[in-house]
Length: 525
Image 1 (cartoon, helix red, strand yellow):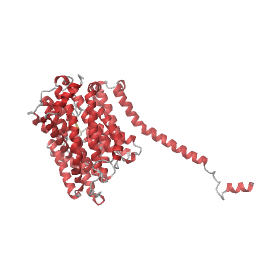
Image 2 (image 1 turned 90 degrees about the vertical axis):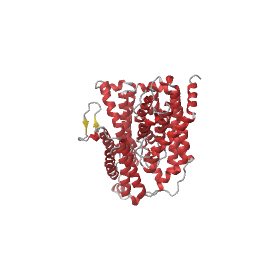
Image 3 (image 1 turned 30 degrees about the vertical axis):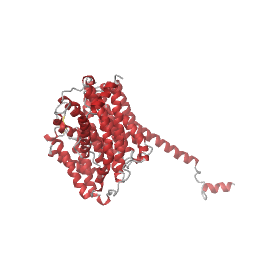
Image 4 (image 1 turned 60 degrees about the vertical axis):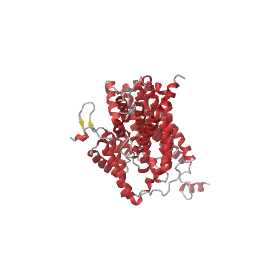
């Protein structure tokens, strides 16, 4: 009971009127920011940091946390309705969510996403409450070799999520990895692929890449194909998912909750890898994987649950170890330092009100998110009824403004236009943009972790097999890479065996009427 007393006291902190108000404010801002392509939670939290100076630390962090997980669902809205992910973690939701919207099931997709987000977040909060000490010890064992193996596994899964030819997916992923190397080398300071342009010295930001490929590229392609475009439904049905949809999505939500929780606690993992892994797992376990990319509700439930669970569990390394798991956590880390609070192992004992107040605010925030999300779905889906001639320029304007607001850079706007043209051409020749974007996101983690691993292991990468966690991830990587080859080989052998058996059991050559063998048999008779 002594362990539960601080937890109960934390609920008392959250239920204070001021903290409740800031929790509601954070969730609302997060959901609205998620709807605006380009202006993600990291940028929003950075902009709002000055506003946290005049409030209590626990109140400030509750609001910033609400912005973070509220934006995870907000990004889903544009992914489903506009095929425009506002966050990297919402990229995979585009594949099936947008197809469901085109089929008149936008409400179903958003409803399943809201329910999955609530369940995944709640499961992760329970895990955070009871398993934080154990998980913190596990995460502390992660070093550069483990991160490198995890990033390699994530990039390999990129080919799994693609609905087109695997070769094209791998080519797109290779381009994404190449783009991730642009900029100043973090180890030597040398400039790579900048061509003397100072704007490229810090690398290419995620926003111009994603907004160009998914935003401008999609707009250009749809304008060319407007005569075959799918019109938005005049009425939106099934705003609340049907019993069959809930039954179909329940296993995906369960798997996504567990998977997202464990991937979120790993620094460098986070919501992006969790959503990618969630989609890949659902496609692997599906009886009919061909449904994915064509409107499979599990393709929305799995990644959306996983990324919200990961968004919640990413607070574990931040609060207990002082290790930010992603860019947004790094900004919240800075907000804590501004407030005079140092995250780390002593936070639970030194500031129990802040630790348990922030943790328990997630229960209230998730409930508020669910309460607001379901009724407002009818408002969001009205976007589908806007004519393409109006929607296309508005979407383009929002995309360009979102890209500009990140760094107030016209160069980023130019990059959006360039990647928009690339996205259009890729669409024309049958390349999906998803693998490129996801490999681009994972590329920076892979490079830095791999080079640090070489330093730690004295240049011997085989040393990764001497570390239990990295060895497990490497074995899993090899298994995932080799399994399709073995399966293809076995399928060919089975097919050849069936053909040989059919030939052996079929009629003998020349047994048909009128053949020389048949005539000879009759004469002998």
